[in-house]
Image (cartoon, rainbow over all chains, first blue to last red):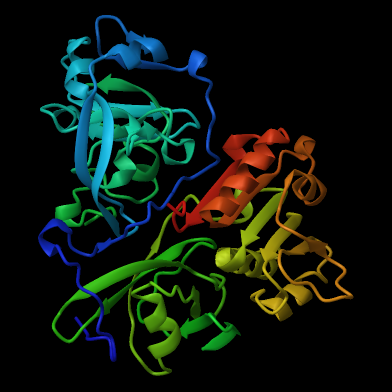
Length: 198
Length: 230
């Protein structure tokens, strides 16, 4: 580790909440691999399919009627920014997965625009993940993944898929979009699992 | 180091054990303070795989932590710690095909310099259209190189100046909008492959505009920097 001559740097005020290599931003950066899709709400549904007896789906209205939780969490993007105390409202994945009994070990999230990302099912259960449709008390902006996105805040934020339309439950893991382009398969920010081989 | 504009510099690096990169990929730059504190940021590679050196074009962000160091403090001979290359989606080579439409806002031109240099160095036959947006001619990076690129029959360069344009300016004026996009992009029927890089609002406008014109969203690749301004 070579010292960068003349570099002082800023240290985050609440360093215990900031994973290694991350900096705190107050802004909300946007990163997406393609154009922002705009799906009309009457064409939107959320589906759990794959290794289930029969696929389950919720229309926008049915989804909105499910019990919502307000969650305040820190989010960590692989491009190094961390945003503290972000406030969302959404449906716990425990609620959604209860409707679809399964022997699956993994989920592949699929989205409008073709994006996918893989998450072990255990990381989606136990109050650790949500399908959120509000940010900061407002409907979720399309740029930030609206009408609804996955929120798995304990993993790097590319796992929190924007424009989510459902989960495919699987007996075996299958890498998603960024996972096939050299990013880490699991993505724990506290272990700095940014890229393959980390 | 090359001064591109008062806020933007291109840094040329002599790297040990560089594995090579694809045009459009980026690297992570890690800085270390004397007490061991480290921080990292990602920068697009602005040089072609064929170039002798790897170069990065960095815009100084006033509230930044790494960019002010790279633009104001770093001097020739200093050492930098790099990780990469990173990213395989926002990358182009002959196999990716075309025709190619590149849309850049501000310093979003950096990965396209890599692609265009690679395009030339590899003798590609893919036709390219480049649309870049800058506030003024003085704030347009790579001016000289763009002028030379425009001389290539396969490369068409369009420039729009959003704030100040010289009186005799022959290019476009104003921010990108559907009219400018439809004028400068390939027709939808050519099934172009489009890359857009720039600040978030710029990329949103360009991508949404092209989709509205009928372009296949699956053939539009984007790289955004910065927030939504709230």
